[in-house]
Length: 553
Image (tube, rainbow, N blue to C red; front, side):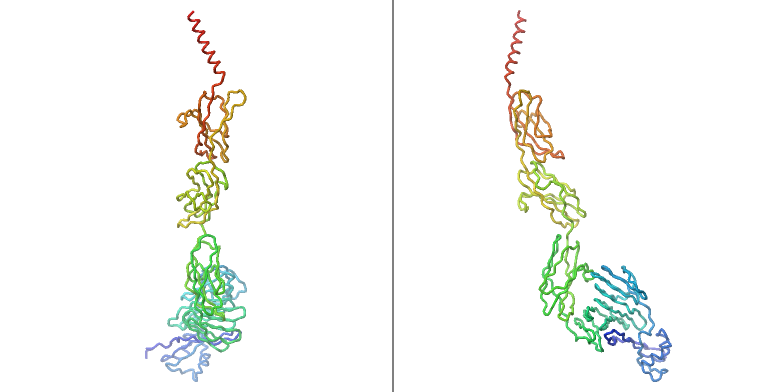
């Protein structure tokens, strides 16, 4: 007779015996439904690693006659006897430092991303670290900081899928893929309890006193200890102290909600407060690079009336998650991830020129600063008030690290520069530079020394000027310029003065880049005809008259 029915079925129950405080392992079994023409020896030859152990199976099932099993009968078989192949895990996420102690070795070595984790290997994480191990069937577990765990078993066979982890301390967050047609087991042993799950998302933690806490986030799990088993549904938790049975199921608290989430700009601290959750003793707040909270950059436990403060983060997007912790230490589901954008770069430019509190002439102001990495353009502001609330001179987007403003009027002006990133984000303004703009006074004459025939010109020296530009003309509009010189000092000596008459003079300052300020207001002076001119003129006339007289004679 053809086998028209499946000669075995998988039961959808998780069978686990309680552990003692010493953590003794429980026997795990599967059930096989006998089909017509099946024999015990035949089944053992097909499914057992060592078929000769059929007598052990017969004894476990209390078979009066091992040669006879009836169709429809259930045969219990220990998982340890079943054929199976190892299911290796892979390091799918690594933050900070984590270490592996391979099977049969006493040495710990650093773990690397994508490394293979085999059955029997031990794992541990350092402070501020996390480690995720993923399996090919979609199951994974995340080991939090300062945790110690051993992969006791990880294999699959035709009748089962088994993983057993031993958590000595720390916290593990498990995501177990729902079983489809196989008796899928995922169990976490601790020194005081055992948590067994099927198709679930749950947390197990062991504290320094050996207390085990299990928190059910999705589907269901069982927590067993000291001969007692507590089934946990979604949203429930329980704890088991050393040498004590588990507590009754406790409803997990709802997460607190952040109240003032905002983007963070600049290298400043930011504060987030939370809503009040009834019966919450503490909140755990986690700031991570990912919305699942694996890549945590900061984790703190605060009181419900405290705020979460963070600062000094690199640029980028972060996700804030918070959970409520009850008096018994059980932690609820996390809040929905809230994105926080942090922008600290680009850094403010360092201004090279002008120097702070410099005195400069009325001329186009040259500003210069050091280049900043990661900057698209720069912006400059010049104002007459230190808070930049007064009249402003604003640049457009500058590609270069130099800016020439229009001519500034006399008085104190304030200057600052900032950087803009490629996405348009503007960094903080630079330190403010104060500059005094001083008007140039008209040139003044100094009388000639002694009886020499030189003309001495002097004017008010300008601090910061490296030279001057002097012009002398006959007319006030300087349409006819007689002298155009660029002396290095604020004075000039004319060896050959111009003819007697009225003249106009103006001066401008020059800087080290040979840039020239506007000319000062013009000043006038007169060159008088000396007394000797009369006698010279008289002698000239007398000489001409004498020559004419001689001609006439």
